[in-house]
Amino acid sequence: MKVAIIHDWIVNIGGAEKVLQTIIEIFPNADIFTLVYSRETLKKLGIKNNIKASFINYLPFGTKNYFLYLPLMPFAIEQFDLSDYDLIISSSHCVAKGVITKSYQIHICYCHTPMRYIWDLYFSYLKDHKIEYGIKSMFLKTIFHYLRIWDVISSNRVDYFIANSKNVANRIKKIYRRDAKIIYPPVDIDKFSPSEKKEEYFLVLSRLVPYKKVDLVVEVFNELKLPLIIIGEGEEIKKIKKIAKENIKILGWQEDNIVKEYLSKAQALIFPVEEDFGIVPVEAQASGTPVIAYGKGGALETVIDEVTGILFYEQSISALKNAILKFLNIRDKFNIKNIVDNSKKFSKERFKKEFIDFISQIV
Figure 1 (cartoon, helix red, strand yellow):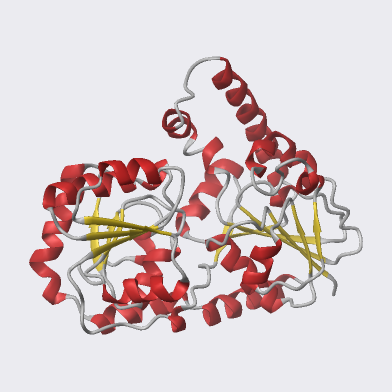
Figure 2: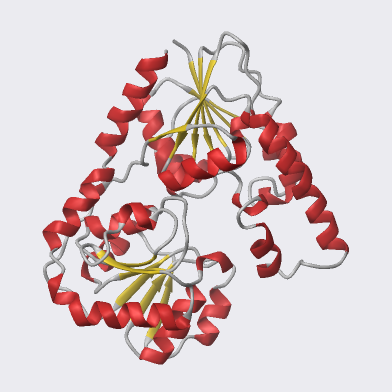
């Protein structure tokens, strides 16, 4: 059986790329198709497969500012000729699921989410980027309008959907009117080591972009004057540094071994964002660290309130502040073994087994 794996882009390493890496481990001889890729990222992921990129990869700034070519992405993904393959697996959070297949082929889409910036985050995306009005706004709104039409149409090209959470399965049902099998993404929990000795700091591990709400965390810790360490980089790093007081350290991007150490010794991970699934809270729990999380989206499936963390239900200063104070009052009740055991539900071995079992039922 000849297998093709389609991934939107392979430029940075996030949760979607870790899923891709594990799917390739299941199908080591598969050919990889993607809009754009970075050779450095391929090396970090250990991907040595035959890989083919779209024409966007060769346009000016195609690999660095690929998002500027968003209007071309549906067209670009449709140009891949997959005629020689029996099984097509798309790993999609943008347009990968839109590849064109033939009647004799099976197309399985592992959907990380329908495009959030054209659906759920549409209005907040415009607001956060200050493009609610004007010519630029009208241009972008028009593009997003046509992307929504294409997104729904292209969902009909998928034979079977797999969702990375109940949250995303509900979104697939709402937007595409399709059912999806739920297989939680793989988390390499074995590489994390719990520490019995916790230090006084709290931790944020996140890209520094508007929807991640790291600025909200900073405002709360400015008030509480508790130690906070922020690991991550992104467009909001200057803003975060400007508003952060002396009790807050912004470390930027860090190597995996440094991140692991901070995760294992933190009082708690602060996770103020609604994510489709959210791998970082699982990695924190694999490190024996409780999670103070916004109680919406994937966190509802990975964090057990008052057992492996604290959930709060409003993205506001008062709600997050109260959650942190509640955690401080009951932190001695958290059991490291219970926290680590919860993370095991999301292991890489479990993902591989469920993924292989699902494919064996339909191929």
